[in-house]
Image (cartoon, rainbow, N blue to C red):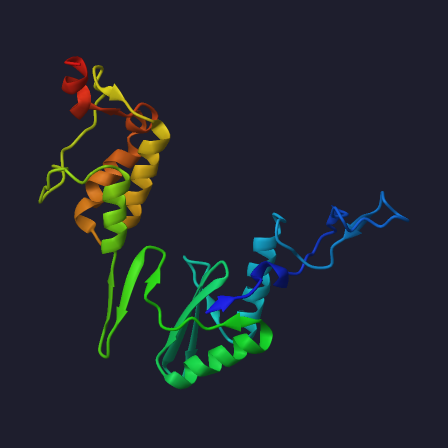
Length: 228
């Protein structure tokens, strides 16, 4: 489900003024400004205003906000669950009965201008395949994109990525690499650990090591650089 012009639905609780846009300046009051009644795109308050309005609406409909994930909403009705996940202006939802799902769709469309985009197949790097008796979730495309993005196409495969006593030490002769690139790489792998627990330890070591974060280097390139 996609919300059309989501940020225009938020209400402002403080006074916000904007200058008159070019081409629409009032000739009688060229130095005046506009006071906004509602949020609009470009305002730093717009995402929060939209989320607050949507949250208030869902809670009034009997939903409970998640304790850890504040964008997850759950409703229980006679032992059945209806789950809604918010991601900015995209809403993923599912229920234990078709009646609950249709009722949710009707509620949302009565309050906001929305469009249905069909069954969920891809969401935030997750591939979703829905079958009659199960839902299969994978990140194969996400992994392929990481491999291509960071140049790991020819990297050797390891059944166990690292030993449990692994400690990172500074290689004085290592080739210095871009710090932001290293952090981006670790962030990409952290998201992958949700379905690949076998890499959790080594990714965690690379993340918590302040030396690796501040002065990352590549020892694998050391010899090739020396002989050039």
